[in-house]
Amino acid sequence: MKVLVTGGAGYIGSHTTLRLLQAGYDVVVLDNLVNSSRESVLRVEHLTGRPVDFRKLDLLDARGVDQLLAEGGFEAVIHFAGLKAVAESVEKPLRYYENNIVGTLNLLNAMEAHAVRQLVFSSSATVYGASGEMPLIEKAPLDATNPYGRTKEQIEDILSDLCAADHRWSIALLRYFNPVGAHESGIIGEDPSGTPNNLLPFIAQVAVGRREKVIVFGNDYATDDGTGVRDYIHVMDLAAGHLAALGHLADKNGVFRWNLGTGQGSSVLEVIETFGLVVGKPIPFQFAARRSGDAAISYADPSAALADLGWSAHRDLRQMCEDHWRWQRKNPLGYES
Ligand code: NAD
Ligand code: UD1
Image (cartoon, rainbow, N blue to C red):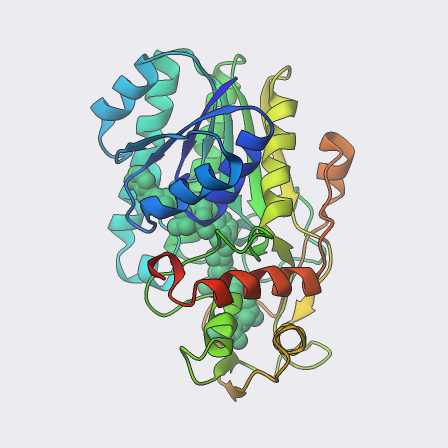
């Protein structure tokens, strides 16, 4: 079975491509490399011993995307490609709306034209906004609070409208919580460009000596230790969730929404402490003001994915830190190392 993976050179896309190849799928990766490198795909080929048909292509190139789908043989698409930096989306909303929404529309038009109607879409827990009741269930109201999050919410609406209009479509909206970790080999992992926005890559860069200390955004939240609580999920568990969703879509039509999280919340201090245990030395940190737009607590109710897909996350915070650290240690400068 041939699957198109958009954004397959990126962090979650490369790990999912690896699992797809191991499961016997043939994979075509489409990526414009705006936030990734070709090296990740080469390493996936090396790890699996299987080829990836890589196409450097921008989803904004509607003709190019149509020509790719016109080659035929695709049964499904997993759509990771998108821009994801929250702060940048506030500064450059048009870039985010154009890239994420127009890019998705180009993909959908090409899929429709060539009768490929199975899609797994990378949504985000960010669609729930900052003040929902915990744990978050899929029916919780949506209230994204920044342009990035609104692109996800709006794409979810577009995909729901499409399924309502044409019952031949099968679409999974996967709402990821906080993806972290790396493949256990330490050969592929997350390689943020510039200063990491997210907690785990920042901690890992402190641990490897690229940065002095972690800045903890707020220690006055109404949580046990005052720091923010999140549902961190190992990227390989997340990858497995995509294969489970793909299997579900094979013989069912309609739109499906699933939270992909562990159901467990961890505080910033717990993550820093666990990472320090793994590294064998404490990670230096300093408290600072809250980051604007941050929720105090966010964690999933992942029971729908278990009931419908038989999927649940297996790896705990310790393993997430161990695998993230192995990748960082072996590749201190990411894929440039
Ligand atoms: P990533 O940046 O590593 O991967 C995204 C990939 O898409 C990159 O390789 C990038 O080059 C590519 N891309 C972007 N715009 C493109 C375009 N117009 N045409 C072709 N390729 C394009 O990000 P990731 O962490 O792997 O995230 C994958 C998806 O999951 C994204 O849609 C993201 O919004 C979503 N998501 C990520 C997180 C997270 O914390 N990492 C959480 C929730 C949702
Ligand atoms: C952020 C985005 C969210 C996106 C997700 C994954 C915001 C407001 N939200 O989620 O839209 O889907 O990343 O890309 O940006 N923290 C620190 N110091 C740091 C970094 C983070 O203390 O240097 C804290 C945060 O305050 C938070 C926790 O660590 O409590 C996790 O932060 P982060 O990894 O950025 O993820 P989210 O904020 O959950």
